[in-house]
Amino acid sequence: MESVKPIVSLENYKEVVGEEVIDELRILARHLEGRRLQNINSTAVGGGVAEILTRMVPLLNDLGIQTRWDVIHGDNPFFAVTKAFHNALHGKKENITEQMLDCFRATTEMNLRQMDLGDDVIWVHDPQPAGLIEKKGQAGRRWVWRCHIDVSSPDERVWEFLRPWVEQYDASIFSMPEFAQKLPIPQDMIAPSIDPLAEKNRDLGVSEVTAVLEKFGIDPERPVLTQISRFDRLKDPVGVVQAYRMVKQRQDCQLVLAGGGATDDPEGAEVLAEVREAAGDDKDIHVLELPPFSDYDINALVRGSAIVFQKSIKEGFGLTVSEALWKGVPVIGGAVGGIRLQVINGVTGYLVHSPEGAARAAVRMLGDPEARRKMGEAGRQHVKQNFLITRHIKDYLLVMLALDHPDEDVVALQ
Ligand code: UDP
Image (spheres, rainbow, N blue to C red):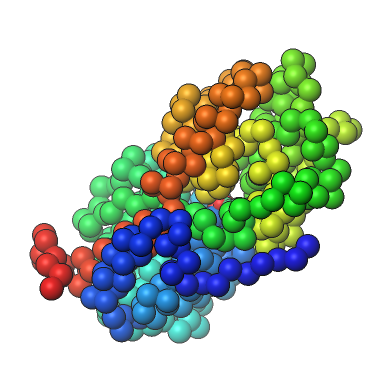
């Protein structure tokens, strides 16, 4: 399929968000001219952080902020440890051993030796690279820890292990107020965002959508329920299969579970096997293992769906929710974390607590196309007002300005 690469220029966003929004970004950016911003995370591909950085880095450069993005190195044992940390910080019971903490420290030290750290603003994403702060004083004028995960009830052992590093940052950013922590450093609450002009979100024609559904053996004439997610237990793909089975007793439908891996998530293959087993030989369940950068296909799969699920048990934000709402597709989401910012119950979709709840909501929505259309419309407006990349960039620019004026409550822009 021909992939159309949008030109990365903020000018193109005027038609989506209006001229004033872009002008305001340019004014803010002028006050940060010449700043060099280095982003560091743990994977270049897969998952929401990589998704955001892929779009954000070129746009910040377009604004005159010299922005780069680097990825820490780690081997499989390290990423097994960080995945356990990730689960534990989300409140899942994990057996964290002393050996795992040693492995984390050793990889941090290796990255401290090997990485070329910048000399201006360093933006560290999530726990995996958090220990790089040890270079503070030698590199980076300002350090920000951007936490994308739901740390509202973290495993104490992991949080206390990370805390001495986190406390050294100049500022921290969490996705919603519920995730805030008792910390001696400033905390900002900034929700993530999606890019309306990305290949994954741009408008597509009906024939393009139909062609993708057919390519995957999905019948465009019958309702499609979809979840797009890494195969991760916290995304509860097996719960989605259970919900689908209950729906299927009442309404004809098909289920799509589409996902790929992330290089920092070693559990994917195991979870995929569990999903395949749960799906059995039901010809109406399509478990799609997508390669990286399947953005066009994901765009079309979502647009071809009657309902999108994001039935997570824990979720930092869940970009997939905004991605669906932006396309006018209502979402049935687990009532957790950042999903609650995006799914307004009964307005942009439904918040649920169980496969039974998800099935009940789906049956109700499948039976009422007009309500679905209205929810989709409300969803698109909700995303337009709150979860587009332009709002996100503005928030980041404001954090950078605040870092430049640490002792001022109000920063006057002349
Ligand atoms: N995604 C993708 N391919 C897949 C599965 C997911 O490109 O096979 C994308 C998805 O569209 C979204 C991001 O990866 O943009 C996942 O972000 P989210 O915040 O939903 O979850 P995370 O993976 O970060 O927990």
